[in-house]
Image 1: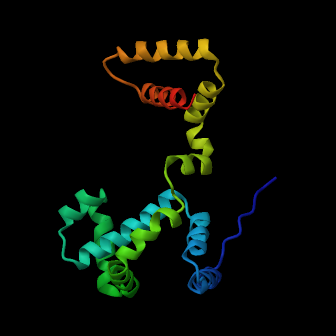
Image 2: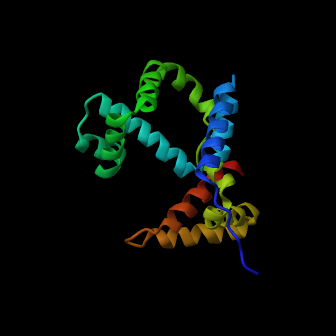
Length: 183
């Protein structure tokens, strides 16, 4: 059976985007706006938007490409696009940079409770398919009896003797440490 993909018209995209902007602007509670954006954006998309805003802020402060590139780990092309957008219009970037600069203390006070990305545990719960090896290891360690945990510790000790440590070794070591403390 053939799949038919419906492409949204430019007018429909603009209408839906405007509707999203209207919805976000009408939220009185930053927590609700944060939840909406967290549901709409992947972590990578949110990070990309944050980097663009930070690039705009740093460009407006007069920082060099080299500094921005090394500080944010972005390509010169990304910096150039943001800088070009600032030259062409960039009212949104300017407003956001000015707003975040003036509200930095308020944002830092509210960020931990409001951000929604409370760390790896939240991201792992949100995207379990990407973290299935680690989740599987955690489940094995959690359900292991005393003898099995001792065998796992021996495996970790043997792995520790290797010259080049694999990511699996570090995960196992960390999981065994945290599980031992909890028990």
